[in-house]
Every structure is written in C-alpha cells, then in structure tokens.
Image 1: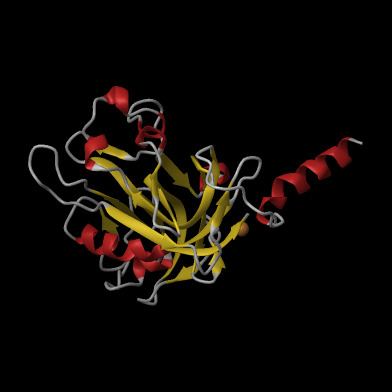
Image 2: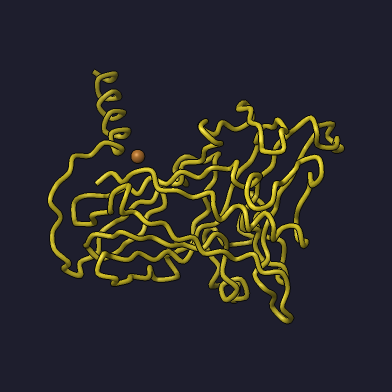
Length: 268
Ligand SMILES: [Cu+2]
C-alpha cells in the first residue's frame, strides 16, 4: 500500500509536463501562478553535472561541475500587447543545476493568455546597490549564500556561474584541469563599470501561449543550452580563456549567453 501511494505520488508529481488543455477563463484581474521551467541542456544532450561530456565549437571536450544563474525582473505580455510586470520584490530567482526545484521559477500574474515573456539574466543595478535589508532570500550575500554568487558591494552579484573540467584547462591547486566562468557586472555603483546585465525576451506563440487561470499552473518550458555560451558571435575557447571573471572578455560571454534560452513548449 505504501508503494502504491508512492507510485501515485510519483505519477502526480511528474505528470506536470503533460496536462490536458482546458479553456481558460477571461482576463479577470485575479492572479494565479505561472511556472517557468529552466531546463539546462548542452546541444542535443540533457545536462548532467560531472558525468556528461560535451564538445564546444572550438572542438574542446569538457564536463560541467557547477551551473547557476540569477533570473529576475520577470514580465509577461498578452497578444493584445498588455504587459504585466511581476512586483520586483517577488522577482529574483537563483536557478541551479544541482537543485531541481530551483529550475521551476514561480510567479503570480493576472489570469490571461501570455505570448511573450521577458526576464533579466542577473541582478539589476538598482537592487545590487540597495540596503542589505532589501536583498533577502537568494540575494542575501551573507545568509548562508554558500553558492558564492556575490563579489562585494562595488562589483555586485555574479549573474552566471559555470565551472567544469577540460583537458585543455590548466591544472589548479586541487590537481584538476578546471575552467571557471563567473560573469557579472551591473554597471557600477559610484562610477560606471562593466555592465553585463542582459534582458532576454522569448516569444511563446510558436511553442504555445501560457494560459494562466485559477486552479491550473501553466508551465513555460524553456531550454537553456549551455553550448551557446561557448558558440556564438564569439567562439569561446577554454584553452584560450579558462578563467573569466570581472574583465572585458566577460562581455563577449554575456553576448553569447543571451542566446541560450529558447521556448520548447508550454504545459497548460
Ligand atoms: Cu515540459
């Protein structure tokens, strides 16, 4: 009996990717939950930390040991062009490949049908410089942020952090051939500096609009292809740039990683 309950729970839990279609209610102003799934992949492969092996456009084979990034400032738009901005205080998320639950970002939006979603990859400059009391939850730099996504007051948050190993990377003190991409830069606090804040807009029309209404939780299933970080307008070579942090080359990586996100489908 216990096994049966476990099976029913498992089916219920994993069936969120195959909901039936139902007619949505009208635009009532009542808010309901919208889920946005960040499904990390590497080309045509599912991303597997440590065990997965991938090859970039430079022909370098590598593994990924860590992948996490901030998603913030979420907005949705319906076909009529009406935009809804999720209240900013409820619009900061840390997506981590090591934490399955974190890959489902949940926001409250008015009931309606949304054909466009946009979000910031990173943390905006205003929030980065706010008093610590306004930077709680995933933004709390001191409260057990063991994921190390904060550099300090002037440099701010690391927006995107990816680490792994590759035979072409130099050997670090731990004896591993490690590469590290820690990308951030919010444009400066006292003086303008590097600004790697990027807004990503995804059209949902082809893959299916999100029908938000009470009692259902539509899920916008996005694919996040980490190979696009290497393969874009700049071909990023691990051998040439094994460690990229707060420096000019990080803008090239940000220029590539804006193209990681694509809409696969929506479960309504
Ligand atoms: Cu899905």
